[in-house]
Image (cartoon, rainbow, N blue to C red; front, side, top):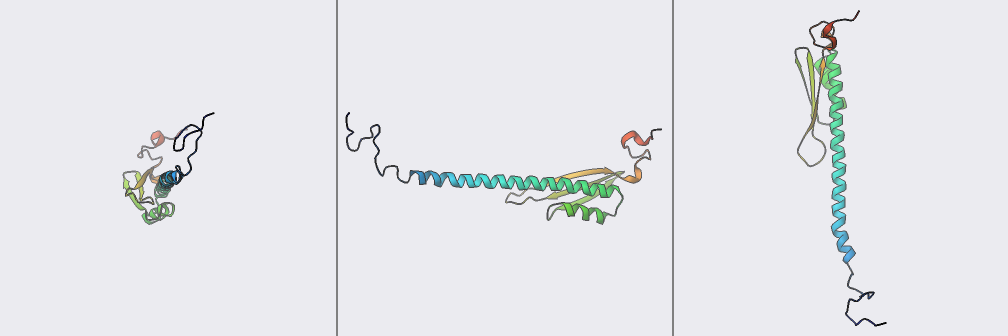
Length: 140
């Protein structure tokens, strides 16, 4: 069996000191990337949670508005369910009550998540003018 010459990179020859710091250099590149990826996933989860809160807040506000509660009560209910610093807008067009909730999710990106819920005002249900299910015609 032939011996490898000093300084050669023959098979099975390990040269001490040549690979020193290689793992450190790889870790220095990979670890920040993994941390950034994990932070992005957490931020996306928080944004999705804020979107779900907006959906729930708009639905809760629309239910309260459909019962003909005062607008202050509608806004208070929607804000109770909505994310912090959310804006709540209530409008009525004909027999339909619309509640729109918008909020900025936590994080550095400047965008908003929002949702809108529409409900038929209870005073018009069953009167034939609301266009609700069945058109206001009662079954025998």
